[in-house]
Length: 119
Image (cartoon, rainbow, N blue to C red; front, side, top):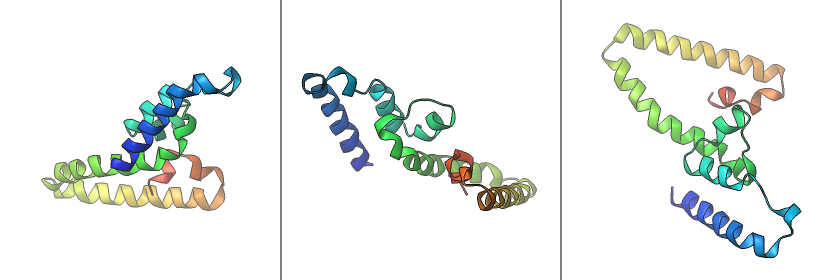
């Protein structure tokens, strides 16, 4: 995604210049981790496991999108050779989505979980 590359480079350039212009209390200590999470599309896992997502917090949705586009074809290809397993996986995913939807209708925190964002 070219826009993400531009954004990561722009934030990194600002971070390189920030020590010259910002006072120490305004500098962001987890910026390097945040840029790494964004560049590797793992911000959602960093948030899930308590890592610092930092100023690139908003890239969690890109992480989920890219993980879906990379993993889903592999899952489908792996299950295509086994029709019964494919059918079982379909019903398991449908059940999971129903559970997540029910949790989402009962709780406001469900939208903050990576697991619930996948439905």
